[in-house]
Image 1 (spheres, rainbow, N blue to C red):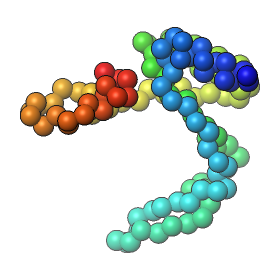
Image 2: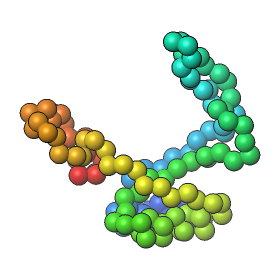
Image 3: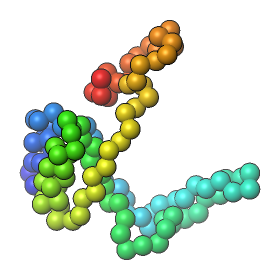
Image 4: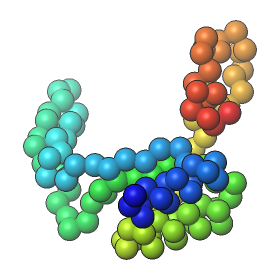
Length: 114
């Protein structure tokens, strides 16, 4: 098992892992962009550059220090810089003003953010 797979297993065992995945090279991207009331598609990345996102990992952490520690572990395993960012809490997980408008299936419970 690769070091990355072992780290993902550690994250799962700690209850931190939510999702991770790799991306194809940026050269395979297609940009979809609104322009003058139309939508244009262009082959190639939105911005030319030496660096691009090759993959991502989503974790659930109690605080920034915990998230940064997982980031450090990822940086050691992947030997590349890791950017750690917070995400806003999904709308589905905030109390609704009108409880009768709740979805039938609770997406937060399904995603584990509840």
